[in-house]
Length: 231
Figure 1 (cartoon, one colour):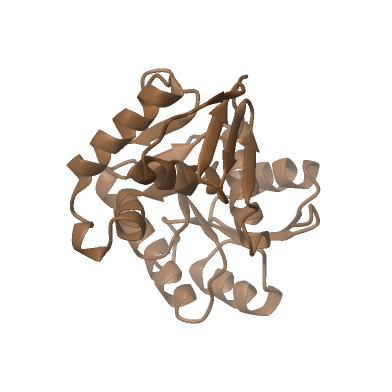
Figure 2 (cartoon, one colour; figure 1 turned 60 degrees about the vertical axis):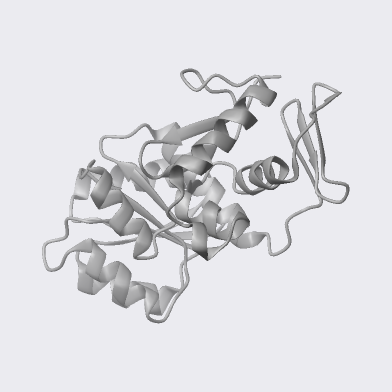
């Protein structure tokens, strides 16, 4: 995705829009803005942005209704910004079609990392066969992975889990998405089963859940593979 990608910011708070406009413009993105749900949907249809940054607390409609309307005709990536930090609100937004969720107040570096991840995922129609993330190298062709040049001895499921997380690095991947993709629709409620595999994968990566180098847990929702790691 080109750094000239246009991003639509839908938020009723002018200071937030101004802050995001400055931060995004500094990275080379074009920014268009809307302060209401109605204006946001109209601009999304007219301007065809590469990404929508959507606040849930809009004056004329709830942001979730905007998201649902948008999903009726567009698959543009949507990054939710909201003061709502409750796990249920996050899950509801993700289930409604959002790709990521950031709680206000937030750090600009984290926000920009989320933006880059969503734009990269949209731009990359075919995931490369080899991923190199810091000292970690993952090869999808022969189902192998090395860390600092040393092979990781992974089971088939562990490799599939690592590949799914790493190929979506920087993005939140929900438990349901992982379970459905790797174990099938019949296992979408087996979150405890997934936690066991995450723990095993962390052990083999030498990762610490309390100070993660690779895999971050989003409690009750899913996991995020860090975009930048230390070697």
